[in-house]
Length: 441
Image (tube, rainbow, N blue to C red; front, top):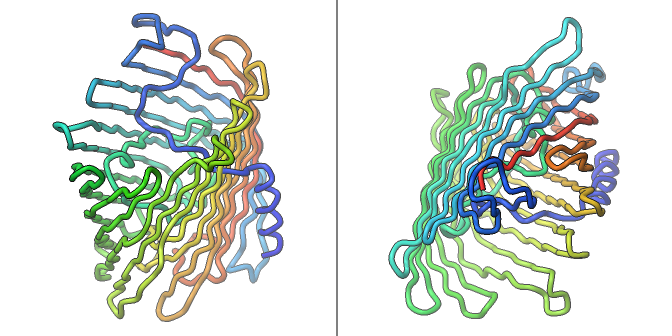
């Protein structure tokens, strides 16, 4: 554990904060007018971008053998990555639309060489207003990966349509993160659909309701996961920055064709939402939300305190950073049986311009999780960090170097599928070029 804390502390010095999420707004672009369109990016309401990454690097992985009783195995290999990514954004008078598609393939130089199939992700979102007081958001995402990754608990449903518009992939990531955080070859396909509507009530109140369907399909070895999550509530803003939120949501989880029954989480939000710039630092924003979850795992019901906090900071004109904390519960896919995993997660990132177009970015996510299986408790930690330096070469071409680190560590093999190591540590570096083409403006 001390080694993990040392790695976490070192990464935290690099990754001090969590950047604001991307959305379906019109894509920020360089002054290049685009290959097609009006030629004025500032006036364009429809934008299409294409980005390609080509890189090579070195990857070192250390894996436990037989729950660590037989020591560890270390493998080192060279690799190449090819990434193709496209994005479209349209800003209408009352609606917004955004979509993306991204694919990553890799070649590894181990004995005989190995080229992996493309990992793919894509999504689309459509949001806007209905009448004078209504709003809506629709979202669909899908991914395919030839790898299994030990997941971490994440936020699920949001409090309204304005929080359901995130769709574009991580703009700073050169490859699908599942490639760098892979654990074993286990083909995985995932789908997520979400819809939400809201309506203003009175001067300071609003009603909202949402529904999310999440499905993860494994080609072999692991049961599929299906989750339904309806939610509704009321928000009342009693000051410029603070609001009271009362909501109820039910999330039902099921391991399909496994013989296990459904698990349910009743999420009750009776708390405060707070989000404002700090008076002493106009470029700093803080926020938090709290709630309670009633967990029904088929044997008994328990109460669990949930919530999140965040702080964002803009500094030196071109830099943004922040820190987020999440306390939540979720049923994760890829285990021998469904059970609730309770997690505390801290995540951070930063990005900024060093001058003359040279950009530096970094991010980190650490999670401590625990679950009970057959009345025995198990805990595990996950850690993922990356830092990246990009240097422009010509108008649409830049070079970059990147380092990444990923780790998971289970206290014991309890709940793990056969072939999933109890602990794995991966470190790698890559260097390559990026071709960024504004196609339409």
